Length: 119
Image (cartoon, rainbow, N blue to C red; front, side, top):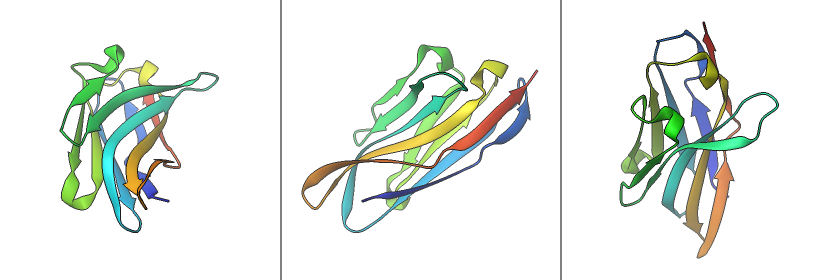
């Protein structure tokens, strides 16, 4: 199992910025894709952004132009730079990693980090 540790959440005013980080660790794994999801209170968990091994990125329409996902492959770390934050961005943000470990595909989730945007 790949372990994920997220950091960088917090409270910010509307229009502000935050950067989330997620570090993946474990025994002999190869990352296929890394992604950020978010879940607001009472709502389902939705994809925010994803980046694949080939650096192909995908964004939810609601964050395009405001959020940027990036990764440091050497550090097995994925980042989410969030700018021009809006109150509707308030949610728990989860990191998800799809990796090959022990010749099997595995999916791991982080514990979540709270992002609160005040108006």
